[in-house]
Amino acid sequence: MGRDIDLSQPLSDEDREFLLARNQHAVVERNDVAFGKADADPTPPGALGTEPSLASDRTEADVEAMAGGGEADADVAYEDMTHKELDAILGPRGLSTSGTIAEKADRLYDAEDEERARQAAADDE
Image (tube, rainbow, N blue to C red; front, side, top):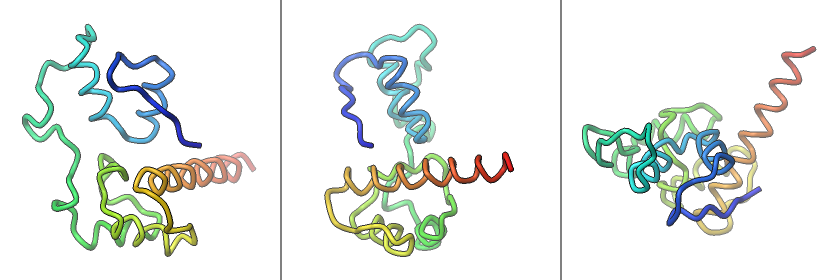
């Protein structure tokens, strides 16, 4: 369920919603600032800790928590992870570890969407 989003132009409402649903707040914020969205935060990306954690900032415990289906840090984007980190999350979930970082990230986002749908259905019962 990947989606091609052109970040060289302002985000559509649909693209914005898609990214925000996947905790891509920093990507949306950078785009808003770059294209002068009226309600955008004028703080430049990277200032005051606005950037998501980079791979070097993640601990092994963070990756292990994510592998178990937990969330170590809601602002961590799968696209910012290394192949090794993604494989450590995909493998225990029974998901394929093949492909590019983008493909692996999409696979994890899709799995999260499916889990939320299952949880919503269980909550409705």
